[in-house]
Image 1 (cartoon, rainbow, N blue to C red):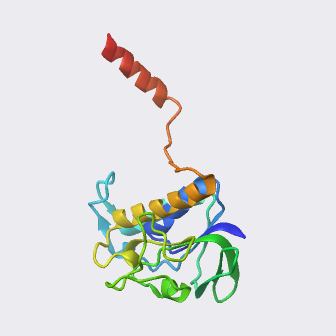
Image 2: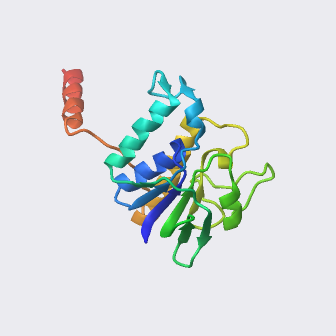
Image 3: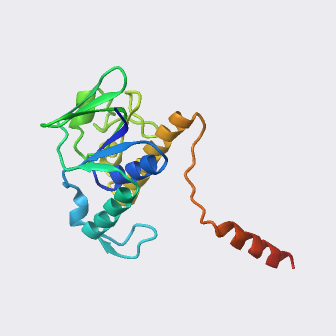
Length: 196
């Protein structure tokens, strides 16, 4: 059994996988590369001036690979609760996980099969942490939004889901802030200069 299975490899799924894996949770991603990002060019993603959607994905995949995320090029055919978490099925195999994060764009079939509640707008009903009505199952991106389908929003949804999983695991509100070794020294130097 792994800690987290992410279904979908677009901005939401890869963001979730990055946060969980880099913070010590074994994470597996299933992806068929059907993301809308291959049709996109990003000019509105904060911190990125301009990038082709496929190039963005290539960088994102390299980033999660660097942290050791296990990625499978396989379609998930089913997700079910199994008492200890979830069983994620493909045509060839099954994987058990304690948490599942669904990031399948506007395709909400897996969430429906899992028994997640839906809103009146026919999107998956989630709380602010992206958790569905099924405990420890999360939905992100276009699955939970009727209209606001933006890569940066989806990436944020994936991060929110991952941080909630990490909060549950750590027992306290989890924050993932990275500080370079020399950042503290640079801040102290700036403070000293202001005081003089």
